Image (cartoon, rainbow, N blue to C red; front, top):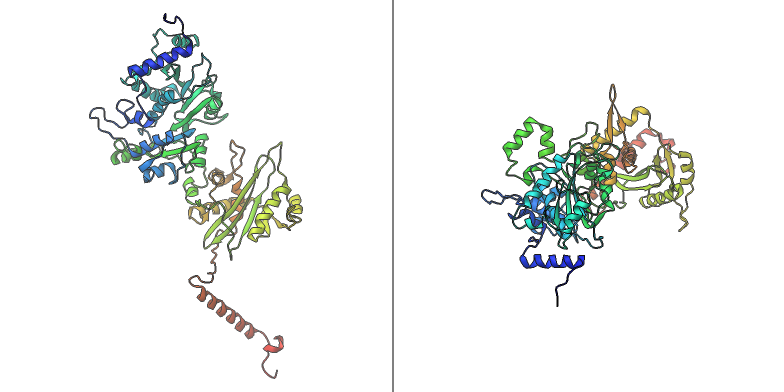
Length: 577
């Protein structure tokens, strides 16, 4: 039988796969963790002079989270828990789609991102591509020089003996090399890696462009947004974080990941918004990691070096070493105070006997959210026990009656018969709230609407008092990231003699909608302390009853001293009078 003169593309790829298997030219790493921390790979944390391994538990934990693997004995490590903002990570069944690594410099984040790119070229799913398509892994940064650091880690690793065979040589006599050139791609701007099927994959450094111009038109097996905290959102800058992500969203191959990496910067922009919304709330889709220098690389970030940076440049120390965002000058409250005062559970506190409840809402029917909340107090602590919002659109606005029916049911449950609101559509809402009947049970759900509008001089005072109470840990916020974000974003705008309160609008159409609801709800209680009566069986209950009886007897004695005998009922008059 003569040798076959021509093979199909699929047959050629199978021959290449078998050849690599027979000669040992395969991908030698079982996991991303092996690739990153191996001397034959990216050698993260390895002293190349002594081969001493200085990698840290947090670096290993980050890599395992990227892969969606169990943390094992690292799950209980307090450093790891601080880096993700919680002790309860989701149970992984695969890698998260988005990974944000907000970390100190010299912590290994660029090396991790580069290794994730190379690993993706060997593990990505390319089924269904046409014969000529060459997918891409993109590294995008503010400037090419920024992304070149990550790219440099990649090129250096590909020089290692166990990885060099993966690199497509630009002078090879191969039809794929011809295809690369015919497609207008360049070996000077990109590195091409063989996929196990024999198809090349491009890894390319791209400078940030408006509308993600450098990312469109190709299948994407992964994206690194380097120095992302310094990128801006839509219509804010040429280097556009929002559009870069949007450009690849519908082009992601199954299992592809988006990496947002960089050291924190100003407390504004889309990356900061993601941090305050998702940090401490990891999901199978997205995880935000924030790690300081000593926890990632204590061998570089010694106490002496940290002290030196802190003394010379406090802002650089805060962002590049401590991995903290610079607090905006205009912030009314510090984000840490919001995080500290959010209860973990439950989402809503159940009604409790003997508690006094107040309610407030901030109505809206179209783009802004209609927010509603209930609060009680225990001692000096004011607690948001229940909160909910409804949001309509210009095409499908909310039905005020439907919202009020839901509010009425909640009020009934908490024994509350009144809601305070601003002046927006107050008359029509008051008419509806005064005549509410549950269509399912015919139960009366009517409540009183108390219309309230703050004089211009009081608004600032109420917001200031709220901020002070939060700083003093006298307010308990609900475990609601949307509500917490609204509070974090309240701003102060300087004026000639003081400041005004500003509720900025965010890209999702919100206008800090929970802020006026929470502030108005608690304003009358800010300086009050509520002592709750002990319940039967609790410590101090008998003493409480004795105090009540003593108080009643004193009041009765005082009344008898001030009333003339003829003013008393007959049974209280002296005998014979």
